[in-house]
Image 1 (cartoon, rainbow, N blue to C red):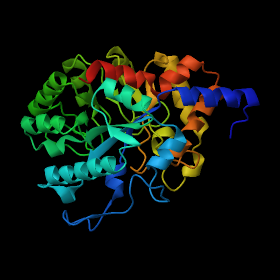
Image 2: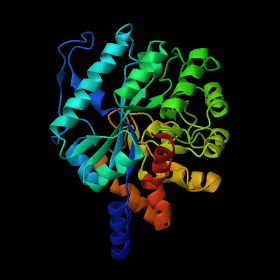
Image 3: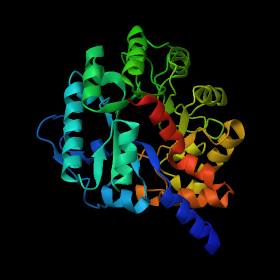
Image 4: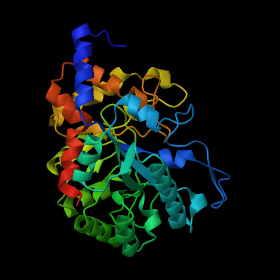
Length: 346
């Protein structure tokens, strides 16, 4: 894929190993859970976090192989089958997460502050951060948000595909502003020290976030509309606004986000070079201080050259090939997101 010289290979390996590599979005916990979709009780696990599997895209052995140090585990309960039972489903997912972390406590730990992330990585363990993808599980109650914070949730993707009590998702976009409850959630998140994630949010709601919060925000798994006019991608104006908030756009490995016209049927038309084009474009547009990695693994994303978390060093090799400095590569791999974590997480 990349014809790096021996010295360049050594440099790429050195950069990757000394960086704190952060991936801001995966759907691994939901992907691990099996059982009839209509039954919320008595589910089983298709696989475990601690054992290498040929199923899914993330487990601890592959995280270690990929040299990734900090992962944001998203919990998504927006499927209509969970309607009226979404909070219960979320608690089940949190139960699985906590159980898997406890069983593998020598290798992974829940982290809720910037310092905990640094300490965990220094110990040689994986730092895990919990995110809620879509505000449906809040059920319109700000008290639920406060309790989820006490359970360790530190990031909220305000909407998923459909509209919820907070606002419109990017797919079902009626052009609506954030609701009064959505604004209340933003205000409470600022007080608590939770990271606002604008991926999946409609554009009108995005601009509401830019107006209503003073903290840095992130797009946990979105790409550039310049290359694919997908509703999940961001325009240049949105990217510049995110930068003004000192935030980060984390580039996903979803083929349809990377290149116009790509579906799961023609993923072979996407390679790491096309993904790197997004990095180059963003650096030219806003510089290197606001770019990160948000794989969306186990959520239906990936392409042949980047099909699981073990492939993460290929990103570093690609950035070396494109001529980026050690400092810029370290920022893209994780330092930019760590800056946001340090500012927001309390």
